[in-house]
Image (cartoon, rainbow, N blue to C red; front, top):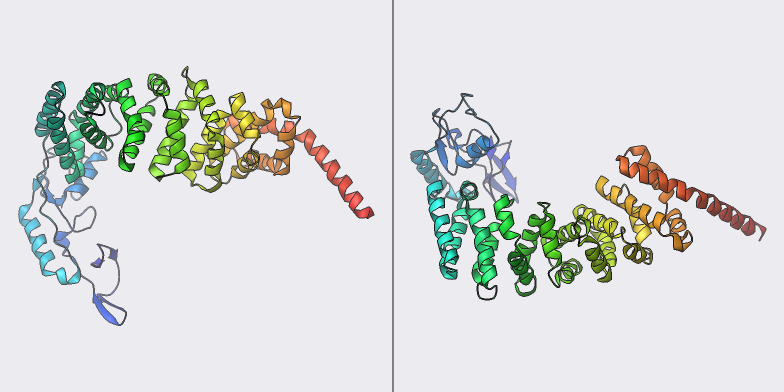
Length: 441
């Protein structure tokens, strides 16, 4: 195995030398005992198991996290999962890196000692104490320390999450938000930043983060924070609502201006993360079975969301198209939504075009939306059905049935074909008469 040290580690097979721009570039062979037996990469933090085999810490932790209980090399069952840092080997690797820096090799940093559950538990207790005292600056320092620990390694992050930090931080967020968002904005922003890499949260943490005070704070961040603050807030809302608690959906829908802000995020597309998270939050608001669903659908229709969703369907990626088509389908459950969709000349052509073009989910939502528009718009005298026929809906629906789909989509596609068929015969007659008249001239 030959490794080229230019911009990073990259395994390749070949000769030890190659030419580039007329110059001979030397490729470096890493000594076998410097490479992790799992990843075959240069070890950055070598640790030795009870079986006597040394691995890179990140690789062997991932191995055990996946449910394995054996040593990858010896296949022996590991009864003691302690990982002893191999300092001697790490120093040898660092010396080798320094000796070969002319080949582009960077010296691996000396790894920090991983934090322990006891350290996390102690810090969590301090966070709770500072929260009880509403000590914004004391809590801020503790949360920043927690983030520094988490930034050192994935192992530290897991240790923090597994030892009560998410629940404590969510509770702290609720307490400071309930006291005063404006006065405690610094610590609130820091807590939300930390929680963003701890998702998904436990039930108890969800309850605190889903309180009315916490929700109002996140919506306040929509208005008053920079791009990073907005992003963290809308992602937190998305994760919170994904838990499926109707009370959270109901509480968020009661906050004044939330619909306007979400539509603004979708229209401006200031960040892909914000756009996707905003679409997901809107989807939860208009598709849940809470008491506010119909009211939120009407609010979003009146804010022009139908037109915004069609714009997304024109030129967005798969993920955004799926979310946009799902929201549009949900809005078509209301008379106002169907009316707004039918009044837009792009609706039917775009929905038909997206069938079998993006993903199975988009196909399902597109067929469902077309079915609702054609079946329940009785006042348009078949105009929607004729428009669907003219843009190829009949042929697309036949293909959907041929390639296979879910029972609900199959049922709607079949009913749509029955609705379209009479108009299809009429259009064919009109087309035939037109051709005959054209021949006579």
